[in-house]
Image 1 (cartoon, rainbow, N blue to C red):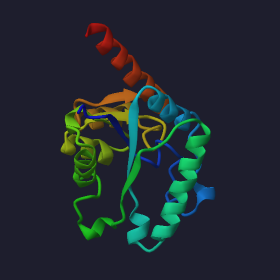
Image 2 (image 1 turned 90 degrees about the vertical axis):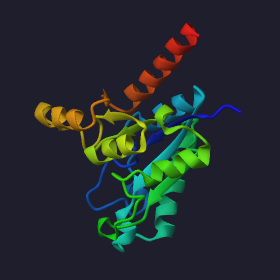
Image 3 (image 1 turned 45 degrees about the horizontal axis):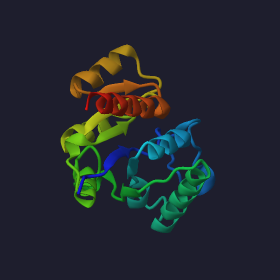
Image 4 (image 1 turned 180 degrees about the horizontal axis):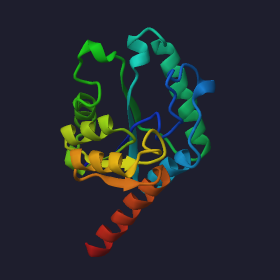
Length: 194
């Protein structure tokens, strides 16, 4: 059986606007324009989309598990209205001081995703908007992709160069829509060459 075409996305800063104070209820989950449509386009092109997100607000007592699940139900509902779906949402509930192995930049969450889907992570593109998440993609063996729609939007050229030096194989995209277009074009080229 062939492994599914799988892509891993971060959540805050990629799908929705990043908030320093954490997304604590559905009203605070503000989608980035075009992001949900990009996920739907990936789905329609045969991609399975999984979200991998650190949710330290749980470990810090700022939000409980039920609230996180409610936010993700809302996120899924908005995406379904655009004709798309997330296969799963993986999240790390720990605070940084808990020293778990599932909190990005460590690769535990991505390794769990690879095991769940039976995929080689070297075949899995992962979209990030922070150096931490790019390092997580690199540590897990995923293909690192930086989207400039979230926390990376205001990076200086010098900061961007530092990130690309730290994670040399990173592809850079303006936003999730551009990332989706890149993957679909790459698929088309591969099919044409087969």
